[in-house]
Image 1 (cartoon, rainbow, N blue to C red):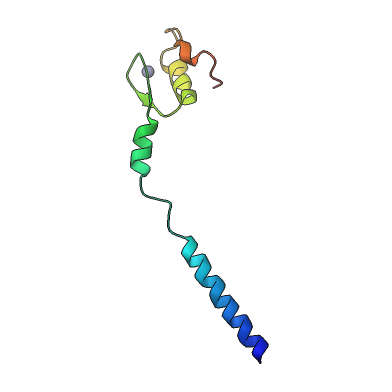
Image 2: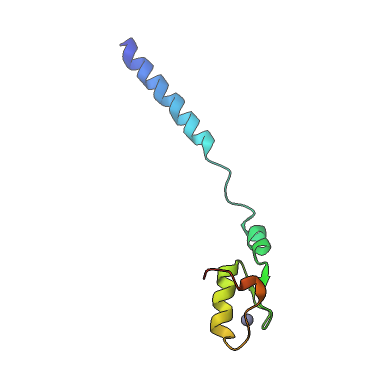
Length: 76
Ligand SMILES: [Zn+2]
């Protein structure tokens, strides 16, 4: 009897712990996305979040324009 009671109590304890761990996350995604758009195409002014995307954009949209030096060693 006492054993079964203990089990239930510990299960309730665990449930409480887990629900307390949720929260956090979400929020601030817009600000983060805005801050991430840091690469601006020198030709058409399109903004991109990372050098890889920038290089792919540059190579497909402006193949005749020389690659900016900061993209020369980017692995796309
Ligand atoms: Zn461009």
